[in-house]
Amino acid sequence: MDESRAGMIRICFHGAESTGKSVLAERLRQRFGWPWVAEYGREYAETHGTDFTMDDLLAMARGQNEAMLRAGEAQPPVLILDTDPLMTAAWAQMLFGRAPQELFAYPKADLYLLFSPDVPWVADGTRFFGTDEARARFAAVAEEMLVRAGVAYTRIDGDWEEREAQVVEAVKDKMPPAG
Image (cartoon, rainbow, N blue to C red; front, side):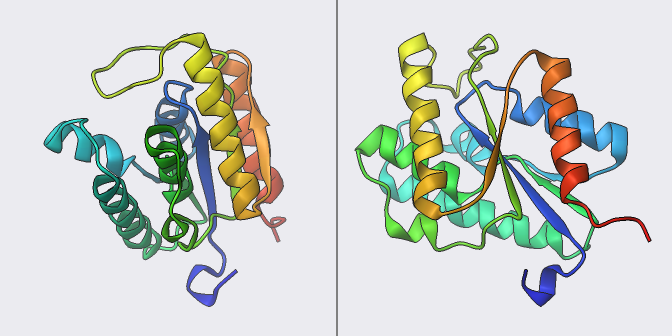
């Protein structure tokens, strides 16, 4: 862990669309006070539309990284990342058939939680891959990006309560013992 993050644990929620990442990030903020960095790509899509180019995705990754760095300046004990540039790499692979190396060069989280697409998909105007087949493919690509980056990850699945319990357990396992 680099010195600028000493004592802070960055937990990244990763996975296909509509798997509960943002919902759980907000629930954990309310329950534990853990701050979270929202998905910059959603804001970008709502502002610029969803007819993405590779340049759009690279801009999203830069914006996400900047937001993560700003949030980390406060040095919270736990910082939840709704996503990070590795998820942008999955989008690039899904949309353009390739994931530029630039997307793998950003700082990595301390733990990645890979959310399974086993909850109902909800259309919200910014989501693309709602069929069972597309969700399964996106989930596989998201996992492939974690493997390609060489980061450790834990799978999160089940209903909403099970997901929340698994996330809390994974975060607590990563935290240093109280001392």
